[in-house]
Amino acid sequence: MNCKKLTLVLLLPVMFLCTCALQAQVKKVKHVVLLGLDGLGAYAIPQGEMPNLKRIMESGSYSLKARTVLPSSSAVNWASMLMGSGPTAHGYTEWGSKTPEIPPAKIGNYGIYPSIFGLIREQMPQAKTAAIYSWGGIEYLLEKDGIDVVMHGDDDEICTEKASDLIIKEKPNFVFIHLSEPDGVGHGIGHDTPEYYAELKNVDHRIGRIYDAIEEAGIADETIFMLSSDHGGTGKGHGGKSLEEIYIPWIIEGRGIKKNHEISDLIMTYDTAATIAWIFGLDMPQVWRGKPVLESIK
Image (tube, rainbow, N blue to C red; front, side, top):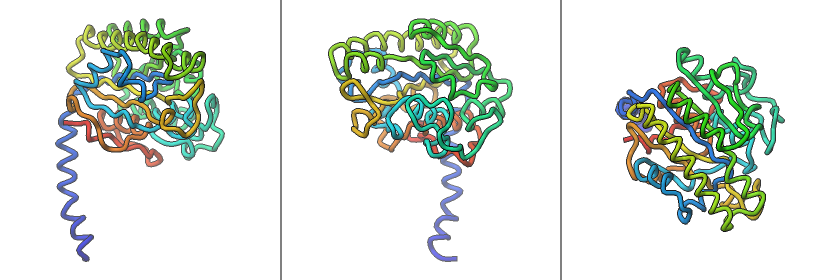
């Protein structure tokens, strides 16, 4: 046996023990809330008036340099976030993809590429799951038959109200909440404009309402809260290769998560699903390419 192989053999038990130690930090986590904010560019957060979001960053771990897949558009990136893979694997490649433009590398038990919802249903059959969204395009990216509650709200206010009510009354094990702003203002008036930053105040208020619902439900001590976006933007659009479009926030807070920690590791949007799977102790499909963001764990 050569030196490299011997070193690897000796390191494997250490790596296993380290992973087990990290897993123990989130052992009592029973709930994950994933909030997705359409069109929230990471560039806007430092100067934005977002006290709720910044409070969560301070009490958790975060990166303002997480990256989208290309193109930096909606469906392709929401799919990547939930499916733990990039577009050449799951097949959704465009802003408004309703079906894969590329044949998926695998079809799961619910008729599309396997996502975090399917994993939870198959490996945690008693778990309660939900998806609440204000952009209709999310519907085509969901393994709907494997989700307990699927709800399309007419706007962000309705979705925030429904999501908060669901968390308080039903205490789902996993809920994905999609809100359409600030993307609408980004398209209508422009990114990095006074109107865009004004809308961020409304976005932050909704973040606070959803976060407060976790407290009101009495599950804060066994919950991890995550927040991210599908893309940023420049001018009145997105889909390109600028860092203003590609850099997105990635925030995680709750039991077992480091506090006030800026994550230095590279995060891709498809690492979100992998992190949720790791938190719940789920086996990930071989076709997934995401990795759990272990730097955020205590």
